[in-house]
Image 1 (tube, rainbow, N blue to C red):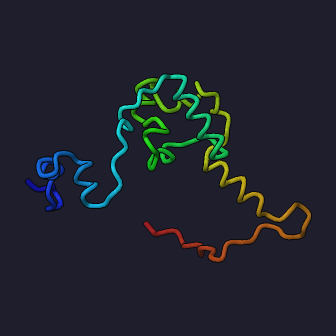
Image 2: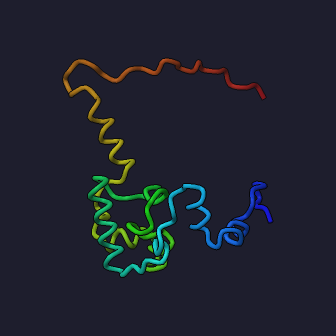
Image 3: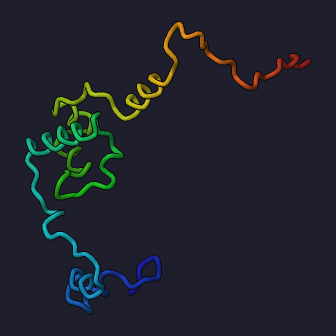
Length: 138
């Protein structure tokens, strides 16, 4: 049995070594955390995890913040959606909807780089101004 990539499937490793973790151990690789995928999250714990993430990031979390999450420390997006109906509703329930998201934070940082009013540095003209084209003849 091989996977779509031509490598042996996980089932082959389990059959030969007795478990996936035994195969990882034999290869000298870190073991999977037991129970990480089976953690039971109460609604209050999910909301607290969202608040803690927002505090850590200094902004409202967005979907991409969950890509490289540790399942033992942060609930998954599907779980959040299932419990609250949507990610947006969970953010609102956590009381962090008013925080800026990462795009708004970037905008504020960019605005902070502009010269102060009255500094004599006005907006610059674009480097390339398209030439007016004559109207097509019909």
